[in-house]
Length: 543
Image 1 (cartoon, rainbow, N blue to C red):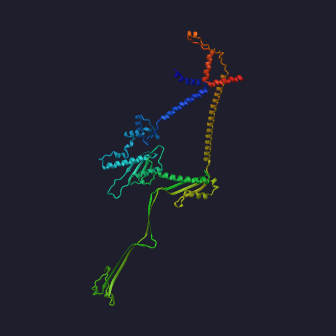
Image 2 (spheres, helix red, strand yellow):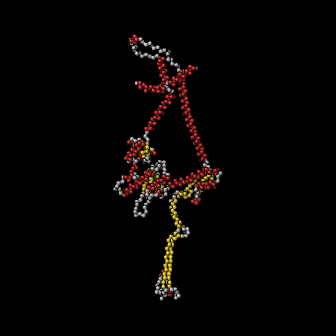
Image 3 (tube, rainbow, N blue to C red):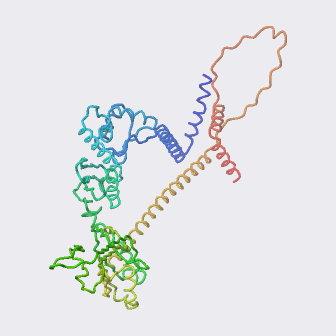
């Protein structure tokens, strides 16, 4: 009982102290206790909550639904992120859960990609092996393309020709890609080019121009044979070029003329043709021609003298080239030479020349022709030289008269009604924002003033209550009775006979003793209040 009473004593003192507090002090104490308990509960929940880590990412909706259903059946806590495509589980169970999901065949794309080759038997025919390999390659490409940030899913179809030993040339493989983007996102030109290079580099003999890319809306992003740009992509490239040049020109005009005093417009015609050309140039080498090959022949015939008899040849009967009779002494005259002959020589020489072969391939997207129009406000054009402005614009836009570029710089009065209305609207918006900020500040100050006023009122009420306690009538404790002197020790005779003990009776305490005990208890429970009361009495006595 004594231990229990000692343990309850602090609670009694706390209750007594709380009971003697003012209303404002009680409210503050209750709010502090509630805030402390709530903070402790929140901290305990935060400290005891498990750390979540991704189990799988970039999941299809069907796979995410199957995985969450499996987690619900096992009672495993989980969270969804990235629009439901990422499943988060406690960090300490992620590896075990991945093994369990793999055993259950989740995610559902386990039957695509190179996993198909693991299911192939030893009795598969050559056609089955080829088809399975192509399907595996298509699945791997679709999974890789689906890893791009803006792509939700992708399908890839490959057309790979078979090898034919009797064909002179091998066929060209082609590919088609269907891309489904995430809601509110589109593939940029750079991402389309990345998909082209990714697919073409994964298939032997395929080029980027052999790949066709289409989105889920049916928009042609890249056509086969278009050199990487087709349809909307060509328009996008043209728009990007025009916007870039127009932005550069507008910066120059704003610095020279002033903001809103000049407007530039650019219209460009880009060449998306894939042009390949070969050029060969032949020139004579320095120092004269050089013989690369040379050959010669020489023929010589000799014969004796003879005479023609009856119009026939003499006894020699010699014929030269082309069946021409060799003349003798008789055919040449009586005084001719003693003998005749024939000599023939020829030379064949091949001279070398300089040869230069140049193969040129023009990349699609070059500027074929562009037109630039600049309009300056009449008021602003009075302080500038339009010829110098035209030269500056021509240099900034890259105007080339040889390809037919056109530049026009003119001055016209600008309609400032729209700009003035926009300025007034902006000023009104700023004023409204400032008024809202001022109103919020006034409300905040008012709330603080009310709180401060309540605190002042509570303090004044507490002071009045304490003053009223000090003005209460003093408690009558009654006359202080003297303590009787101790009796002399009894004699031996008297001590020998023990006196009978009187029966214990319940003696009622006098009112003065009860009041004294109450005062002592009050001083122990509320020493500050008692001290304040005594200080008030002393002040009243001095007055």
